[in-house]
Length: 343
Image (cartoon, rainbow, N blue to C red; front, top):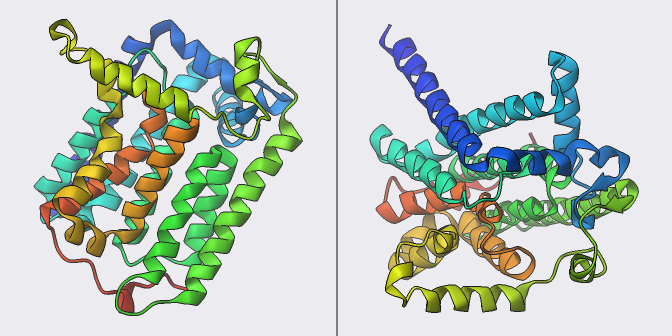
């Protein structure tokens, strides 16, 4: 009887965390939730905010499915789908983080830190549905690496979902490549397969954009110039200028409690991990560490650094790196944990 009771308590606790996060999101985002809805509501007809959103077809399909299944209007279905994705994200995070922790208590601390990080990212920008899916996929990637690398079939499914959800999430495919090439026995064939899957997923993401996109509702004036050719929004100079301004602003006593700069904290965790315990982090999570750095770099180049939601995909990776820094049980050697070639 004890085990079923513990499972029930776990389910209730994870569900409660997701409910709290959704309630805070609705309270903070308020009317701006309609902005997140409008990004996907007509995407399948080719209309969305920016050209770079044009191939992100997974969440519009999920939204229409939720509306058809429940008979609800778009906004209630959107909120219900967001609640479901946040709950799935908590379960995926527990599944991914528990093997890295020395105890259930330590895993709970990491999960609570992940949830707090999600709340700190709220700075007036709503969480888009594809950002919630990104967190689920990142948590699953952590779990696959923590559990021996996972099979090629599992990574193929994950990368297919990533390509249909948001092109930046395809960078998660770097994790199995690095995982297969590190440790006692290097598996070049598996690395090549994982690399080919990653490249193919990028191709699919951009092909979907060309096939689906018709019109961008926000690409006018300066917005159209910023969109450029439509492949990515290049913002690296603007982002570094913004970070410099925010850091200088912290020298003013009245701005020490400003919340805006807190949204870049997820980007600092990989830096701290390698600065404080580089050997432990690299030995336990080489693929996750590399992927975290790539995601930070990609966001600095093409994201808006003070738009908190762009860092959401890093949160499960950060929680895993925190556990690696704490020095939980050693990861199995690569001879035992190379990514399996078959399902």
